[in-house]
Image 1 (cartoon, rainbow, N blue to C red):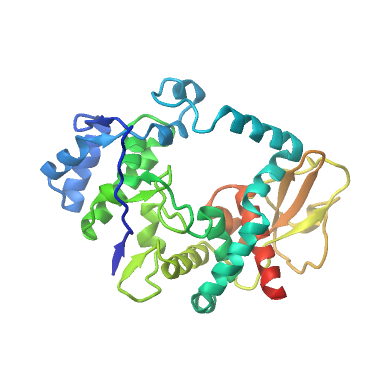
Image 2: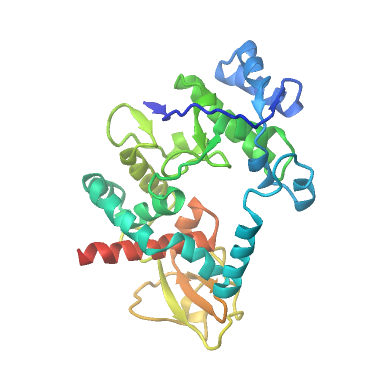
Length: 344
């Protein structure tokens, strides 16, 4: 089974080319690619001798002190944009600001249209994997606005920069770089012609290279796993959630009651699970027949906190992105999409 990418030729007018053939981290990667993946040293020397350093991507993984030493624009956003973001954060609270970006009427309408466009695929995927269509669509909506923003960064240069330059996740990115290069060899594509996110993620669901073989699905049966195509992306996301423990037919989250404006009685976050009967002073608001342990998710607004119970399925969503806010945005967007679908 082949794994393919949709290619876009990348032209980097303002990025500095750098020779990494003498870089120790790069040499170690080259040796691995030669010894384990069938590359020739000459072809790797050619590729590694002119890597466009992705400073904008690198800054995301540096300390503030090290960011100041990187050449190029100091900030990708204008001062006015930064100031506006801070004002919104003060006005709405951290969750209010985050949710306004991820959960809005336009994103809901796009999600409904996306599900209707690929209704046969969603129906078949739900039957096979047991993951509701609204949650799959919500992940694609949060990740790439249903394919409208899959990323602008050249993946080869980005993963090389993040893997070879010192930063807090360089070991991780070197491994992803090797996975990406191995795919380019087995699937016979030019690694310099693929675009994605600043962290090396690719396709509608923003899969990292290491996730392609683990979770990628050729759902349209064309002999290729192409995660830039909706059919394969939809099935691959469902497969990812199922393999990480998604429980068919179970709830994801529910708003919970507590006394007061701010909540600090128990540790919150997806890592902390409790038997529900021990959570004195809290209770779910509305119908709730979930009997297993729950985590407490706190959403900070300007003048008060929202408290939610999160289930095993909520935790599974955090395997896609390790963030309470991310998982909650997926849940709430999914519920709004589901409601709109039921109204039509």
